[in-house]
Image 1 (tube, rainbow, N blue to C red):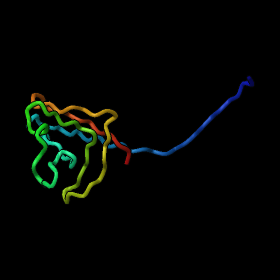
Image 2: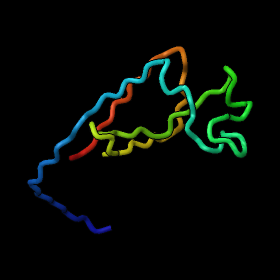
Image 3: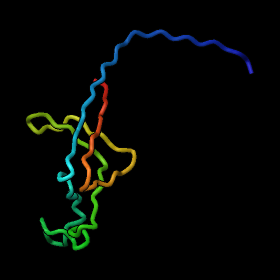
Length: 96
């Protein structure tokens, strides 16, 4: 194998924004997945999704402005089950 040398110079500033999203234990304990609705219903959930054993999972987090315009979506690497017993803090970092 032939030895080689590599050098690189760049002067580009990357600005990063950090947002902390706090979810209280009483919030978002409902799934918005339309496949959980009973056939022909727009609001009634299937029986298994109404009991205390049902746990929704977080898969993504949306960031909105004051006019409810979607600005960014954060995707979790793995679904996270929501608990009614604890609060969650999500720290989102993104480049501007």
